[in-house]
Image (cartoon, rainbow, N blue to C red; front, top):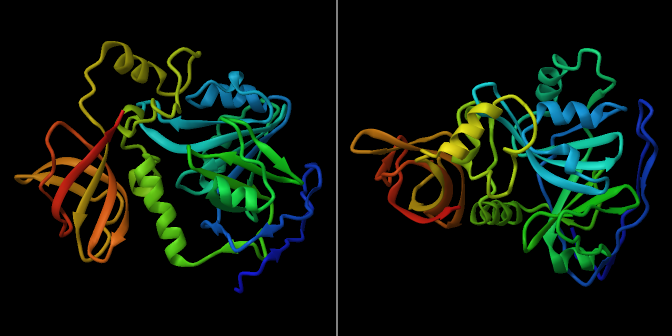
Length: 316
């Protein structure tokens, strides 16, 4: 795709099932900067008079404290306190929430959450045609979008822009973009590396129901609350928070390898498993970085051939 001085987007989504029509009229790029097209997002919508109350009862963070036009990190835990799903929770209206998943399938979440709806006045819908773009503050401004402040959602004709961390933002749109984006593999690889360096985990299927929030550094985001009322796994999380004893945490590693290791690759020391790899990305040919959950002992090897494993930092 040619990078021109003035690219414009025209797209329209007609949302069904009673959701208002959303239109993205134009996002104009000035100069030659492009937003990065990220993999097709997994988005679940909760709508209805009881949407917020339902989310408050099921999810780990305090949804009642989330004002309309704001977003928060959140998670859905098992009764044993393990993380089923990690996501960004966007409150786009008083009676409508969007879950932007960090790993996993929106259809699976829909199926699993539906079991708990009972008489609640809430409708669940997996939105299958959304698009998410990423970029720096300068990238978003070149696309005609204001840089979001803190946890604010900036709405631009049906698209939602949010500040993911200190240097990067996301744009969630209801329909794929035809232009104004960079879909090259190396752009996405750089984004994944930035996720690792920011300590933002992605929980794919092999990692579900295996890790406590504290092990993943979710208290730092924060993605759970120990002050709100009951929710699945709350007792276990609160006990670990108040009584201590947690010996595992989220670490950034560097190592040499021929192929990127798969998520959930065990990390070992002298044949004993000491950690679990979460995600990895290249920094140079034959050299990668990763997020991993580790205990007190640094790993020296893995089930896959990793060389010269070094702990770069711990996220606290």
